[in-house]
Length: 220
Length: 81
Image 1 (cartoon, each protein chain N blue to C red):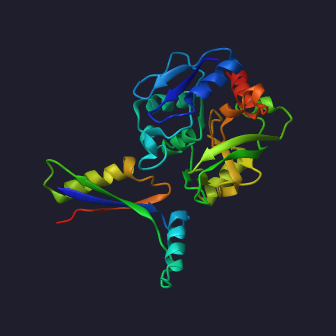
Image 2: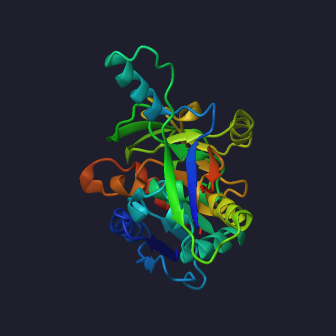
Image 3: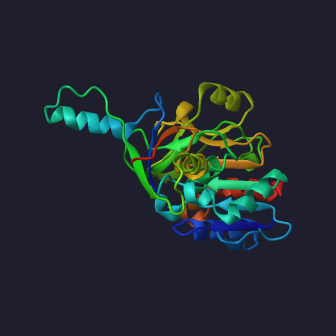
């Protein structure tokens, strides 16, 4: 699988994501700086990593969503290319409107950093197929702005179309309907608040993140 | 020319910062506080624009493109003076 990790000033999970991708797919991802205007040729996956792009100034993900490379990520998504946004990357995807809704300040106001149990709501997606029959996993979150918001009609549509991919079993941030991850209509763009790159190494014990990258590798 | 943009969460969107501020004010004895909403103010200095309507149009465009996330936020543009 040919992948690229987008790097913004303030990204801090980009290298972890690269390590996880290389370990799972056997291929080193390209690291692409936000000022680039094009993604590498014949790319399968563009990953928008976690972190605090542009210091979270104005709103989390707001500046990153307007950077030149994100226009290229949009074109990649519109062609049906795979896009995964993790944490700050999810915020960027809602800011670009590649995904509906928005991510607001956590309900409890605090930065939440811990392992969270998740229900795999839809295991028949390009992001979750490698979970096979497993319906639960544990992946850590680390965010201050992770409360997913959308209007009721949008939430109904997401649920009805199987686009709510992961749900919190013990909601850490007040997200509407316990949403932890959603996909676009095409099923090729997913945003998730939990960090799969942090649980993709056997020596760390948990492997929930591995299955996400494995799914992508199988989909590509 | 100057412009002042005020951005805040739309009515109905839970403002947890506002809730915390209202709670703290009540604890300080300001019992009159029913609700607080926290937003942000962005002051802009605009060069080469002398027409107020032109300024308003440009700043509104800025709000739509960057300054506000209109999914959850509303904004107000003032051209003082």
